[in-house]
Image (tube, rainbow, N blue to C red; front, top):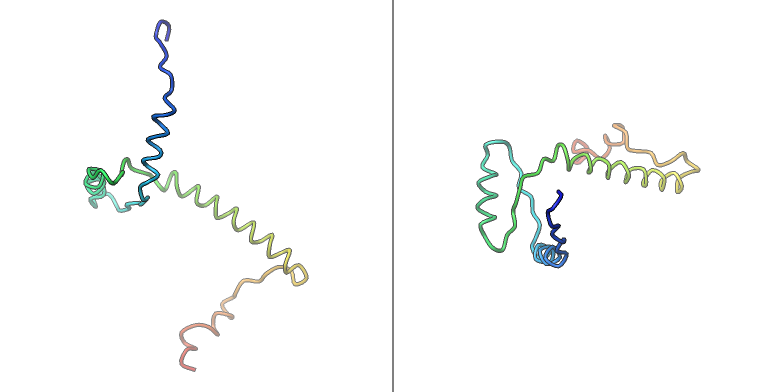
Length: 109
């Protein structure tokens, strides 16, 4: 805005906040609506040793990123298997027939 002085970004303060946060263990709280997760978050965040702030929405943010990670990893494994097992058309996955021989029904035999 015109006439307003810009406040310089305080890199040192942000760096110190990040350093303090990195010294703490990371954890996630999950639950359905009305299960008490917000209450638990507030109780944990009241402790000076714990930072438990905000709510995440895994279905809209975390899960798509996890799916993309899985897709990339699957491509890497597929390429590796194709390179290693090229002469036998890749690495075959177990079929239901394969699993018949390793299942619990076969354990007593």
